[in-house]
Length: 153
Ligand code: GTP
Ligand code: MG
Image (tube, rainbow, N blue to C red; front, side, top):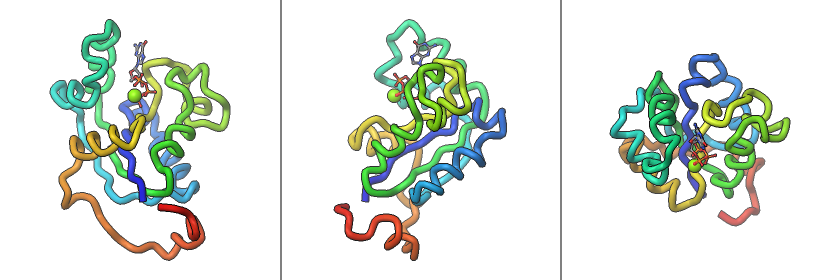
C-alpha cells in the first residue's frame, strides 16, 4: 500500500485544529503508521523544501515553518499520495474548494495548515527525512477489508 508524509503546520497546531484534521484523514480510511511532534529546524526546512530554497518567498516560508511545533505523520492507503493531495485543496487556501482542509479552515497562501507529499517519489524522500525505519509501524487493521478490499495495492 502507498504511504505519504503529512505535516500539520505550525498554524494547525497553534489553532488547535490537529484533532479535526487527523479526524478527517482517519474518517477517509487512511491508516496512521507513524506520528510525532517536532520543531522544524532551518536545516530540516531546507531539506524538505529543497525545490523552493532559491525562490523569493523562501525566507518567509522558512520563518513560518520553523515558527512552532508541527505534527508529522505517515498515512497509508490505496493511492494515499493523491487522496491526501485532493483532501488538502490548492496551495492557496483562498482558492481551495469548500470540503477541502485548506478550503474549510484557511484563507492564506502561505499559512495553509497542511503539507502532503506531491508524488510517490517525494513521499519516499520525505518519509526518510522525518522518520527512522523503527518509528514506522506495521500492523493489521480489521477495518482494511471494509476500506480497500479488492483494490489494487
Ligand atoms: P506543501 O504541501 O506545503 O508542499 O504545499 P504545496 O505543494 O501545495 O505548495 P508548494 O510546494 O508549491 O509550496 C510549499 C509551501 O510554500 C506552500 O504550502 C506554502 O506554505 C508556501 N508557498 C507557496 N507559494 C508561496 C508564495 O508564493 N508565497 C509564500 N509566502 N509562500 C508560498
Ligand atoms: Mg509542495
